[in-house]
Image (cartoon, rainbow, N blue to C red; front, side):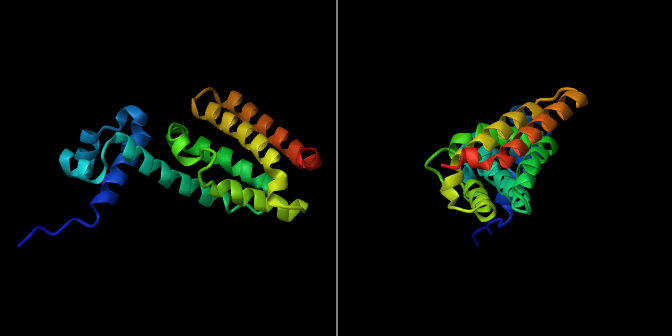
Length: 183
């Protein structure tokens, strides 16, 4: 009788990989370490994921989904960037994972669900079409992404608080002056 495939194996591998990533970052993610943490063998991991980059991308896709889920709870545009920054601060290793997988997840030409949703929220609130707000979205995103990246590399609490508050004040001011950014 042929062996019965483990239906939960891929999920176990990803759970183990995420735990290793959270605890040790990129250095902690090795195929051998993932296999050991998942209770399987390295060749078995290779059958599911061709290399470390494939595992990293699968993790990044999962983290991106969690980030979007958090952002999509926002009832106001101002809440979107606050949630983005809070998520990055609460999950610094996951934010790093998104940064490292940037070109596969968010690059121009690829589907960008968070961008499409946010542009729709802006159009619903301020009128016009979603594409009218592309410059505003890009400005908000670049400011928030840079701030989030700085918030995740450590630093003292007071400095991080000042960076976060400054970013939010600037974003709020941009929203108050939305007409400047409409194309």
